[in-house]
Every structure is written in structure tokens, then in C-alpha cells.
Amino acid sequence: MIGAIIGDIVGSIYEWDNRKSKDFSFFQKKMFFTDDSVFTFAIAEALLQTHGGEEGLQAKTVEIMQHLGRKYPYAGWGNHQLRWIFSENPTPYNSLGNGAGMRVSPVAYVGKTLDEVMRLSDLVTSVTHNHPEGLKAARAIAGATFLALMTRNKDKIRTFITERIGYDLSFSIDEIRPYYRYDVTAPGSTPQAIQAFIESTSFEDAIRNAISIGGDSDTIAAMSGAIAGAFYGIDDRLCKQAVTYLSNDLKTIYLTFNQHF
Image 1: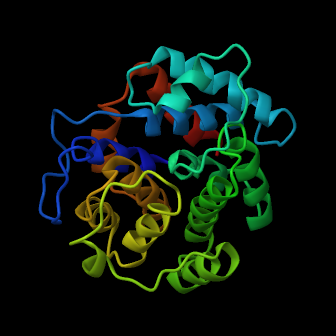
Image 2: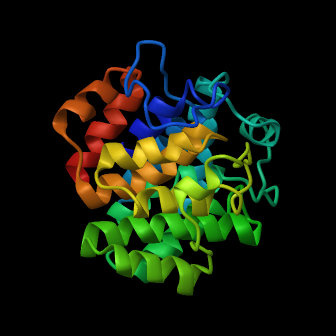
């Protein structure tokens, strides 16, 4: 999970100031956590409170998403998401945005099988992103993160993404970097985040690949970082640096989730 948070923080200053290069400072004082991290922690807390089970998970996810969303109203929410956060009757709004994939990684640490991870992914995603493409993106990131943890095999991850999920990964980061533009849809950014991981040589390299194409940098890096963190592991130094950017309540969720899962 911390891989997604690091990706979000490092990408935070590049979303509106894109870098078309892998040469940039990894941590800077002006970086910050965004809505991507807030909702990742919301899902982690929902899983903690339901003890990793499926029963009651959707209701708990909605409850905590609204609680943390209202606590951090300026974290960078989209208009639809912000209305949902403050709604008295929050219902799914058929979103196919990449918000589905950026927040889902905690389920990969809770599910015992790939199928269980897919079910948990659908439960926590469908409370907002019930569009087929939104659900698909969340399954892709959750499943790839789970396989990264369990197999450490990129060929198996690629096969899962191309055959079970159905994403086309027949492109390279170098090929798309010159023309890739800002795209917050799930199909327009999730395969790119996955390919940034596939081509990487380390956790940090995956984040650099993701940010280097431009676009919605924090979210692409969060999705890529979720998989890369599970696959490579993350140096304690980077984890400790990332935690310094978090508020106390988010830091508590992170530490508690790590203890339990």
C-alpha cells in the first residue's frame, strides 16, 4: 500500500507541471498527499474495521470515505467525487475514472486468493465507480498487486492483465512519452501505469517511468507504485520519508494496517 502513497506524493507536483523525463527530484518539501492517498487509507481502514471480511465492507467503505473526504476537502477531488463525499445519500455515479485504480491496493494485502481479491476490489470500487471500465481498472491494479506479492513474476502479471483483464500492453513507455496527454479515464491511464511497472528495474524506476509520460502524474504513479512496491519491496528510507508527509490520522491507519495485514 505504501507504494501507492509514495507514487501519489512524488507525483503530486507534476500533475499540472508534467515532466517528459525520468530526471526529476524524488522527494521535495513542496510535495503533498492528495485524494489518491486519502481514499487509499479509507479503504485500508474499512478493511481493518471489517477484519478483512466481505460482509459490511461496502457500507463501511462509504462511511469512512465520506469521513476522511470531508476531513480533507481540498485534497484534489473531482467534482463528482466531491458531491458524493458531501451527499446525504451517497450512491454510485457510474464513473470510469482512474480513481478506481489509485485507491484499491489495500485489498491485495487482505485477500487470500486472486478471486477473493477480485471480489474485494469490486465491493470497495462499486460504491462510486460502478462503470464496467472503473471496475476493470480496479481489478487490474488489485490483481497485479496481489500477483506481485505472491509470485514476483512479471510474465504472470502481464498475462493476467492482457488475458483476464483485457488491457493492451503492446506499447512501450518510450513510445508513448512524446504524445501522451492528460487523461483521467481508467482505460486512458491504467494500462500506462501498469506498463510503467512492467518496464521498471526497481521501485523508484517504476515511479520515474510513470511520472515521465506526463498526464495525471500522481494517480498514474500511485497505480504503478502500488504494484512496484509489492513486487520489489521499498527501502525503509523511502517509507520513512513518505510518512513525514502524512497527517497523524493517516499515519495511524498506515501503521495499524501494516500490523494487521
